[in-house]
Amino acid sequence: MKKFIYAFLIVIFCFQGTTLAEEERDARDYEHPTSFHITHIFVSHETNMHFRVMSDQGPQWHCHGGPQAPAWSYINRADDGAETKIATLMTAYSLNHPVSLTTIGVDIDGKRYCRIEEIHMFRP
Image 1 (cartoon, helix red, strand yellow):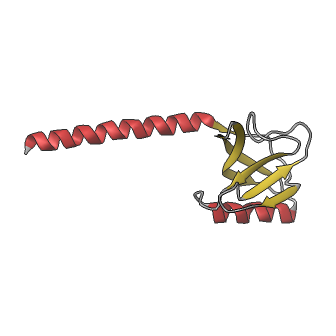
Image 2 (tube, one colour):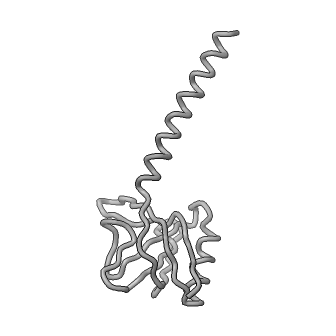
């Protein structure tokens, strides 16, 4: 029985280390583009970069290597907190409030796209 408990604890510690390493890697990949006003919203299929926000302000980027002219980033309907994020972005767009995003670059079919992870909305 002791061997089983020791083996179980070793497995738990091994998986914990992998999880922490993945979280650290993800945290390094996050990008924080400059704040901007949303100039366009585009809605597509729920798994095809469903809700997209765009900015035309100067040489803008939402993540390195991502779309430019206009710069844009997206939320898929299945993403964590998608409904709240979409509501926040719609509010910012409607009130013309600036937003600041935390994004992460996602490579799809050899191209880089910017997925929205966090949103900060400011008063003008």
